[in-house]
Amino acid sequence: MEFPKDMHDMFQKIAEHHNAQFRLCKTLVAGFKATNEQDLSYMDNYMDTLFDFMDPGGDTEAVYRDYLAHVATFNPQKAKKYEESLDEHLGYKIHVVYAAAYVARDLHQGQKDKGGNDYFSSHLLPVGKSGYDWKEQVVGLLHDAAEDTTNDISTIIHLVKQKLETWMNNPDDKSWIDDFEEDFFQYPAEQCHMPTEEEWDEIATALQLLNHHTAPNREEYLSRICVNKLALKVKLNDLRNNMDISRIAEPTEKDLERQKRYKLEYERLMNAFQEHINEEDRTNRT
Image 1 (tube, helix red, strand yellow):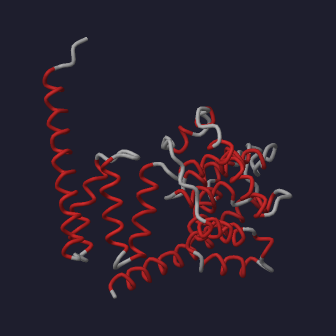
Image 2: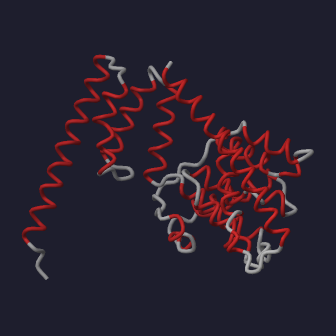
Image 3: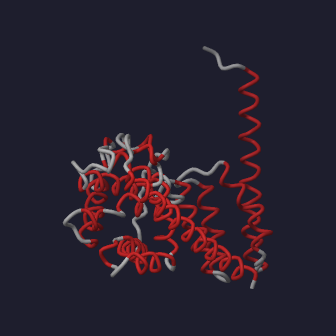
C-alpha cells in the first residue's frame, strides 16, 4: 500500500525541522564553550529541544553529552543531574529496574498480603511502578526484601547485579524483557549503564532505612526515613498502596485502625517531603 502523500510530506517536514534543530544545537554548544556561557536557563531553552528526537547512541545524544561536558566545567552537580536524566530518558538504567523486579518476585514467591493476594503483584510491583525514576522503582520493588526474607541488603543487591551481568553477557537473549515491559513502559536500550558504586550505596542506604527491624521503634523508624529523600519517596508510595483498603475483601476493625495510622504517617511524611522541596528551592536560589 502506497504511503499517503500528505503524511509523507508531514513527516518530511518534521525530519527537516529536527535536522535544523540538531545543527543549531551543535553550533550553539561550540559557541557556549568558546564564550564560556554559564546561563543554564538560556542554554537549556535550546538544548532541551534535542529530547524531542533523541535516539540512544546517535549524533543527537553525542551533542547533548558535549553540552553536559561544558556544564560540568562550572556546575558539576547540575551536569551530573542532567546526565542522570539523560540516562533515564534513553533507557540506559531501566535494565536495573527489570533486574530488581525479577529478584523481588523470586524472593517473595509464595508470600501473600493481608488480603490473601500475591504479595509481589499486589504490593511490591505497584510500589515499584509508582517510582518517579529508576532508583525509586528499584528501591520500591526491593523495599521489603530484607525485612520479609532471610536475605540481607548486600545479598539482595548482589542478586540484582548478578541478574544484570547475566543479561549483559547474553546480549542476543531479550526474553527477559517480556515479563515487565508493560509494567514499566520503557524498552531497555541496547546498552546498559551500570549504576556507580555511589548509586548502589544510595540504594542500599534507602533499603536499610526502610527495614523497620533496623529501628528500635516506629517513631525512630519514621524519623530516619524523613531525612533521606529516596527512602522518603518510596515510603510514601508504600503507604499509598497500603492505604488501598480494596486489597482486603473483608477488612476487620484492626485493618481499619491500621488505615488510620497509615494516613497519619502519610501526612507526616508528606510534610517532610515538602521540607526537602523547600530546601532545594532555597539552595537553587542562592
